[in-house]
Amino acid sequence: MSTPTTDTTTADREAPPPRSGPLIAVLVVSAFVMILNETVLSVALRDLTVDLGVSTTTVQWLTSGFLLTMAVVIPTTGFLLERFTPRQVFLTSLTLFSLGTLVSGLAPGFGMLLAGRVVQACGTAVMLPLLMTSVMRLVPAHRRGATMGTITIVIAVAPAIGPTIGGAVLSSLDWRWMFWIVLPLAVAALAIGAAWFRLESQTRAVPLDLPSVLLSAVGFGGVLYGLSTVGESAGGTHPVPPWASITAGVVALAVFAWRQTRLQRDDRALLDLRPFTHRSFVVALVLTALLFVCLLGVATIMLPLYLQTVLHTSTFVSGLAVLPGGLALGLLGRPVGALFDRFGARPLVIPGAVAMAVSVWLFAALGPGSPLAAVIAIHVLLMAGLGFMMTPLMTESLGVLPDHLYSHGSAILATLQQVAGAFGTAVFVSVATLGSADPSGSPDASGLRTAFIVAGVVGVFAVIASLFIRRTPATESTVPTEASESTEVADAVSS
Image (tube, one colour):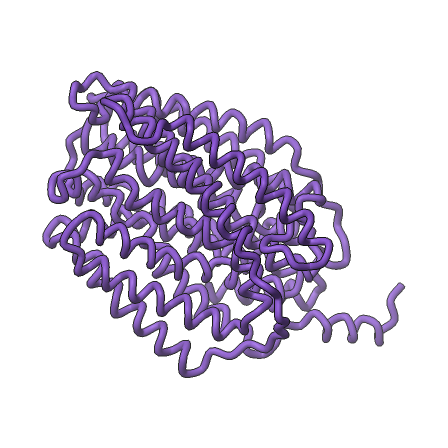
């Protein structure tokens, strides 16, 4: 039994710094604005194909290219968070994002717009691991679930309501206003951060391994480029065959992984892969990948396409249709986090995976005559299932790691989220294009149904994987004390 002195020492050790709340709030708000841009253009894909004179499979690179850039940059954040202070990383992140937003708003054509999106993504990529790493270091273990529930609003709800905001803007304004509205928010966040954002940290002169950066870019870029050009190659030839690009990417990723295992022996790895030695981390990582395939591939890309091309709704209506699901996902964040703090991941993840799988198969049963109310209801079910999965998986995956691997574990997790989202976007758009009966190759009801069936198979795999989540035993770090329970109740009331 612990003595009173030991209890006091433990409490003092676990108590968060006095300014942890404001620091996390600044990070959360900044990240929300940035990640919102992942999907804000999804409802504008049809308009952009006409305005910019490009195909559907080309214009979707405004979304998947954003995700791909993040996947290439995020592996470097393990190095960045060790080499530079959180303040330096924060200010650089928002500066890049603001610059990319300005370039996108001024873009006269597809090339410059894509370049602006890439610069935006570079800034966003750095913010995600900074946010997750800061939470793991500032928040005591028994309250991480509730705090990660708040971060769910950033990682999941921002892209989920992106189509709603995009549809509202497009109903009366040009697509460039999607960037003009965001720019002052980004500049304001940058100014606030420059004025008072401070977070104590220790840095060390870690060398940047340029071959690893190159291998990462070639690997992720090759795989995603190949997947995205599958649909385009169906209508004709392409300079680089999809299979060649995918093969080159897989080989580069294999060499990248081999190089990291050698460099990490001397603590010089760009991305330390030792988190993969933890079983709970690997299981949560697989489930997170499947989750983001459905979130970004189905909910934010395929569903708006279905609403506009099959049900012939306007961009404004299609944006409003996905709003209830986005709100449901946001409202579940903190309650699910609090439940995780008490009961662990397994009782939440399994029913969440089942709800996700069922909802995607229901989407596959929809057709041209399906009522809009049914689409909204199924989308709410999908978002609720994702809500029960996301917070437990993020907290479970990072919570099993030692402190010195937090930055690399969060980088791996964030990288996989973006790769999975880009993978889902590329595969589902390509499947919908290949399965379309439209001579022009544009996705129709038949092609979209095929894509939803493929997503349903992904959902089945998620249900199977969820059965491998361990029952987390109650430990001193996960069982809240009486004082912490009172704090959590107060937090729940205030939220």
